[in-house]
Image (tube, rainbow, N blue to C red; front, side, top):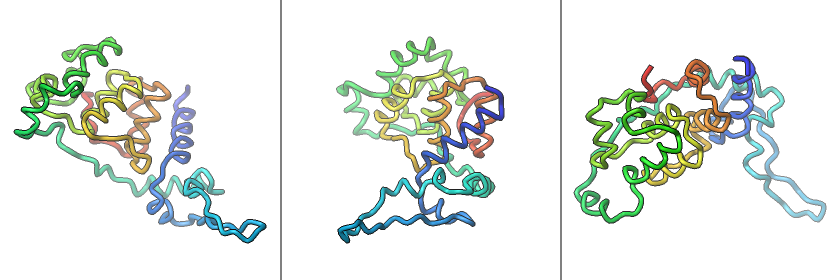
Amino acid sequence: MERQEYLRALDEHFCARYSDYVKIAAIEGYEMPEILTIAKDGTLTRKDPSYMRLQYQPKKEELLARFKSTLVDSEFTFTFSFRSVKNKFRDPFRKQTFAKCLPAILARCNETAASAGEKLAIEPRFWKGIVKGKLYPQKNTVLALALVTHMQTSDLVQLLGICGFTFSADNVRDIVVDYLLVQKIFNPEMRDACLREYRIDTLPIRR
């Protein structure tokens, strides 16, 4: 796809998926849809909240442009967290931990822990700690890992779940990462253009 086409497709994906209705409704020019309707028998019914998404707005392009102009990437977190004393004792008995599931998932991506670590902007000693299960990755780290290793969405969802995270439709970063994975946009230039379009700059990706 040419650059304009994949960015346009990203915008369509975002308008269809993004569901922070408080922020959407606050965009200047947003037209609040009729959520409550009266059936022929007089019954009051409520439409699904998804009707509030930008895809249903007659001037969605203008609204999206205004929304983008206000974006600031506030999703910064540390790349890892330390295990609690309790988890140090529990992890050896768990069937699924990030460290235990990681090798098989990376193998499906034709990657190793070493090759994946080289693509992340994380100090090698901390990445080794994550790989060995001595440290826990934060969500930004898991998302960045998925992008640089060309991970399947199902594998990313599994790793997020193991770490206690989920994909969220009301999170700008999650929507953009989901688009990149689903559309398999892994070319660094195209990937970074999509991230810049929505001002996402805290993912620990080595460039």
